[in-house]
Length: 411
Ligand SMILES: [Zn+2]
Image (cartoon, rainbow, N blue to C red; front, side, top):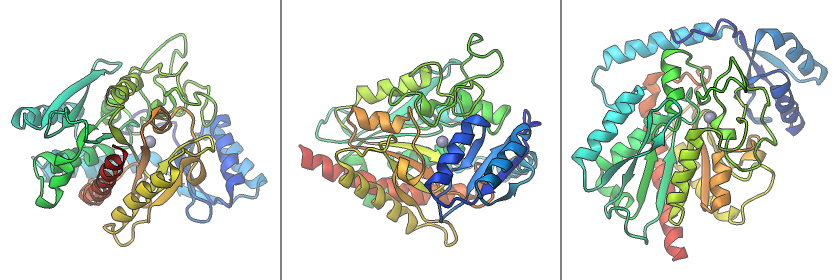
């Protein structure tokens, strides 16, 4: 079932990047040949992984050869990888029946039910809010966690969202685990996180895509809006190109079927509008905006257009501290995090929520690309969720503490 609609997908290629020119060429080919960049890579550190549709494969490899760029086949059968993942996930669900919601890949209804239950059981600290409905009418639920009902203006707000790109399945578990640790399993050493900070956590930014990735196409990334006058066959837009900042100017494709199609205009998608409104609702106190993605072990900040925010020294400090705290707990053979400006470390993209949040005044707007385990790409086996949850939570806790210190400084 998950592999459905993938009959046309062929291969994923590893590309050995040497320098920024190679990255530029890849970005150019991305829109020309409708490439799906699974991993952007880092010159001299890690190769890029690029999925190519069969009709463009020959042209793609030709262009790499012309430029003298080395490449190899990383995954010769994507459909089989999807089937393997599905089999493994089904076994996991059977074996771990009734396991905690943050240790699996839940359906959207289960996530809603969990948030609602916390709202009922912990009414003094948890408030469940609907930010507005998604295109297909699902409530975009988030929790506000606070010991003072969000009324104490001396507290910073930590704003976190996940699953903006629906195929990045390992991101909602981290958001749910963070909620769990703050509400159901608050440990003595973490009391400050609950008492000093107000939290806004949205586990699924793109609920329509999330459900679609569970029942139709595991590799679905975008929203699910439809407008026949834009395209009679392709749905949705890339929500992380849809924000009103450098909109439509770089790392986008005008092809409505592309995974980096930004939409017809900024904030054309109701999901990005809803999150924008959430940001403005709390803007006076949001200290951190944490936008979670998978995968690649990156902690990134703006701006994507080759300029730096005025507070970049502090911003880098917070981002690097996060990486260090996660890496201290990582699995021995897992990669280390790379930290820096998104355009420098990875690639600049226009219309991102990270840049938008930074530009409207959030001091620390960060994109987190959760870990990768070689070969699994987006298909992180469920056995790894617990490890990713606990190590990432350590990084989140550290950034929360720093945000509190910096916020108190500001008052
Ligand atoms: Zn993503």
